[in-house]
Length: 350
Image 1 (cartoon, one colour):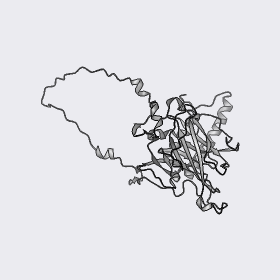
Image 2 (cartoon, one colour):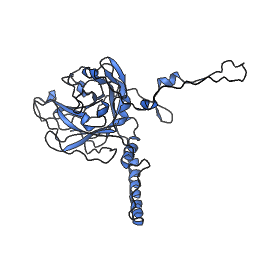
Image 3 (cartoon, helix red, strand yellow):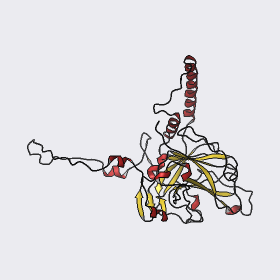
Image 4 (cartoon, one colour):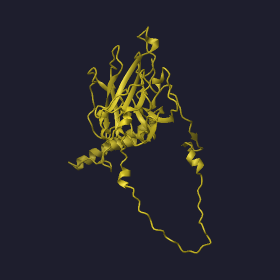
């Protein structure tokens, strides 16, 4: 039996999916956007708040140890600006299929965890002599140098200033990235441009852990001394005013580029602010486990497509989204899907 890992698995955006797979095992692909790879690709949930069709945001193949089922999570989010940052406008569907090898023997289990044998769809980064990792950019290669020359260099030193046209652009409107989609477009196939998701373990060496524990120990000792000297003194917060945000930012900074965090075994979410966690499965009333966190770094890659029209980015905003799933993976013969719990936190200014 595979060993259950308590390490955090990170998801990163990989190459764009040109032609989506129609194979029978397409549900095992981890991806952003596109159409949900299910037995019924025409199925699209509707937002409970505005009743509009909501596109697939992320598809994650996440089988569980000691289960006879293939297991995939389909996370959808509403693109209507009025529904942004609201937990009710997100839907997470858990779907399961009995593995073909287990129809006869439903006691055997062979599933491995999410990260094992994950395909790496991207190109290998290049390593410099100092071991820094670099990724080539075509734009940089094509623009290695720039130069400018003065026209009429033999002319006198007089400069003629032309009147400046005042722009008619509404700058405040430019700052507002909320983009409405025409109502008739909701009847089309709405989806985000698909990308593969590559997977890696979160890097945190034992040396770093030991150093962090020592710092934490010293900090606690200093706090006790300070509180004894200054009774009633309120503990200071980071400059921006919130310790939860500071914890989240410092954690993801160690592995730049991550768009999601996965750890179903004793995993802990990174909150933007203090909040109460859901603890009861809406299907069986059993215990919920935190399984997956979607980070706002994903927003950059969300480019909406309606039918044959490419609407680009700016159609979804959120602070972070936390996915909680049933500890027992409650499932009955004949079920097609189960709703799991999504908690969305909005980024706030403190």
